[in-house]
Picture 1 (spheres, rainbow, N blue to C red):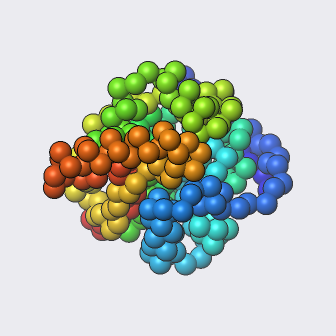
Picture 2 (cartoon, one colour):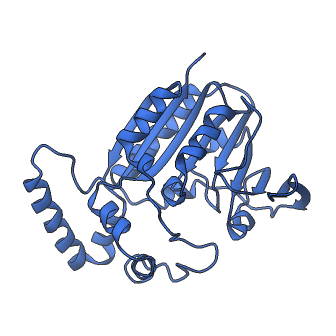
Picture 3 (tube, rainbow, N blue to C red):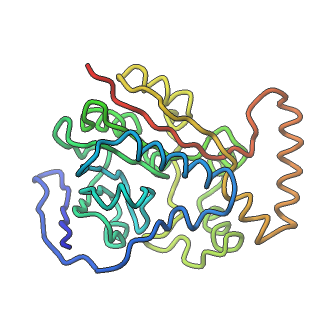
Length: 272
């Protein structure tokens, strides 16, 4: 398989260079890496919806931001031409499943109208300063009846608030010492700086969708996988955080569970 790389610049159109992609088996690492719980169950539901709603036959897929792991079910990925756009050269280099990888900015890079059956933006929009520009580009690039899958953190959850208001060095420390990811913070490795544009909030995202001809066909907030990870790796710390979450939930009676730190949403582009 070959992979095409492109450099997005302000003064000239992208210059494409063809390079050999590494030959490696593709596994559903995104699913296998999740601990049992709400996050894994929701991703399984997402997979079933994509399998049912996407057209049969070859697919054109745009992945906005993409490193080494795909979040697509294998029977979708295996019949798709995947184009990845990412601003991080290390992330582009780490990607092994896309047929075309473009080094560019999601906020400004544009494709021809109605180019893609599916656009996937997973754990990305929270890192982008101008989410509205990104979503507007998605709306144009989607085919009629095309799908947009967004996976993102919930800014109003306990983990979302901590992430939003804590410094980046704390995120790196958490990944290294609580999650056990020794390479965290190195080039091409999470965590990445977080902006939390207002459109990352699910209610605002749904309003934007309605104004731009997108229909919500799946919406799920769920307990962040960080909780079961901590319960396994750091049970004492996890017990303290769970206790704090229970107290907050009791105070916020009738409101959402503060442990619901992430969400999946699938949007369908309506016929105009």
